[in-house]
Length: 330
Image (cartoon, rainbow, N blue to C red; front, side, top):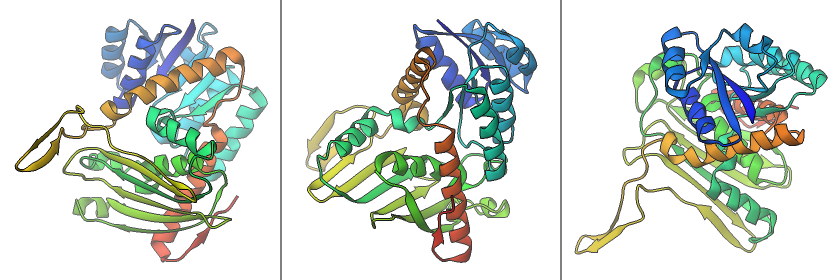
């Protein structure tokens, strides 16, 4: 049984707490949050103890930590966990500073701990199946990848202010998905962004609508479309076109029931948000993390994957600002 402590008891922290509770191989033993009421509420729900962060890192009985705190604390907590010899799963993004990520990864490398980045969509059953079939050569050589990612509505401005922007906060999941699906790295990018939903988002220097075109060294073309609003629900689709055909993963609906009448065919609404859409992925992600700890193997997505996704997110932001193609550095 793997003993896990949770740093951060907000929305995503609660998701991880529930996946741990659902696992027969892990136990949530401690939680901490900057807001004591949030930690106390989650502790009462799960049976965990409310600790301070320092106490978590000092407790030798705790095998691993899951970091769900604000982005600017991620690297610090990863380093503390590494020095304490604890395995780490950390929510994206790794950090908003490339230099800070490099420094943190040096500490992780010296410690030898497993470090896994929380790109949970790699563990979605449909997306994982699509990737496996690509690797099996089912549609030949990949030529185009198209990803659509639209949230039902924007998060609060208080969140957007500290999120790192639409490319580092929202599109970074799609960037990682491209890297997961492709068999080579992305080398240059173009991007555009607009504020079409909430004018207040512009006041904090961000976009609510964005699109990107990315290319690999051999010319594979990838497109990502992101929006903070979709009136019809949580829109998550992938299409991959290859030399021998096409693979696609479509949206998940509340039910699979359709009705056909004089008005045509109608299906159930899409699931409303990421909690419903990706819960199977979160469960699979945790089980994989436990596997890595038990087998002493390096997880994927790794810290290096987090670094590369952040480098591409920064390049997309730069491309959207100056309106030209940006070569990926590093």
